[in-house]
Image (cartoon, rainbow, N blue to C red):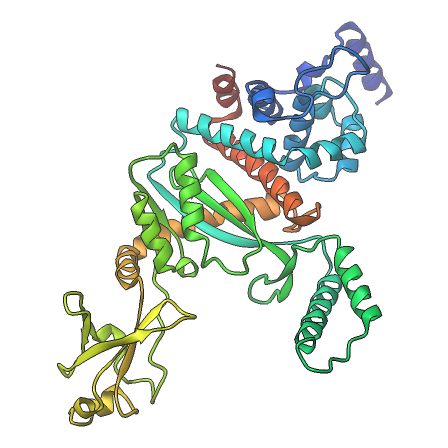
Length: 444
């Protein structure tokens, strides 16, 4: 063994190995290098993109972006761990030309550049469109919960304080309110010092309970499952995200004349479906319908009532007419009802309602809901699952390592998802094209 080790040292002395020799031609570091070097950092809004003429030179934001992209691809997101990688990892040494930025400089870069990182990610999507990796015809939208930094205890205490202040405000309207000014001041001070006021409890999925979290939305192109746009929201459900995400995807894809968007039932929203259609976006979403929960469950459902747009009436299975009675202020729906006399004389009444007369609610945007529901075929629902669920699994467990943010607040969550989706897209493009070919295309 000693002879072999001595021979190896002798060969190394004769033929010294450079860092470049240790990084293969198809390595991910070469792809990151080629991608970052093609970006116009000044145009994208990175701080200190141009070196100052005087003073001590700062770290080039290009190097720090390379470091973060490499780190996210290796499940290394902590600034302290990234500093350690700069000292010991040969791949990082090659990527940063042996620079060793301290963890404070690394963390400061991520804190300052949310908008710039988002624009860099959009530039990568534009490149993917240019080389045919993104077709822009079919896009799937979905949302998933990522746990926030805030603890469940801190969020529960904040919500309790808010309930107390709401109770105080309600008591203030009484003639002789009993209010402790010092307690109110302490509650307001506690809210002011909350480190992550945006985080709220969200259901994390079956069996995982509720935790402080953010709702991460992605739009994924069906051609090679590349993420074309993303957003982080505080919405607990996906019901109000269909039109915003579809419009963002349309913009990211260069405003194609026609874009098909597929999503699950959680995105069922008639008003937003109509807004999508006006934009030239065709939604394919199963409509979330209520059922007739009266009686024993065998009564006629509203799908058996036919709407006549000319007379704005419904026709029931017994050939009776239900006329419009009015809408609801708190819900976007309209009530239609048949005369009690007609229902009382109907032979089908015992199969229709247990009340004196049958009434049916229709959504204000019923036609748009019906259209998008009819378009949501089982084949398209399978396409949705195959397209949009794989990127989330990769983001959560291959890039983040665990679906939890390291940075506090909505701004911190957004820059983490920006870096994560950029890393995912690079990883996916390498899988499709190969590292050598992709690096060459990025350099062209």
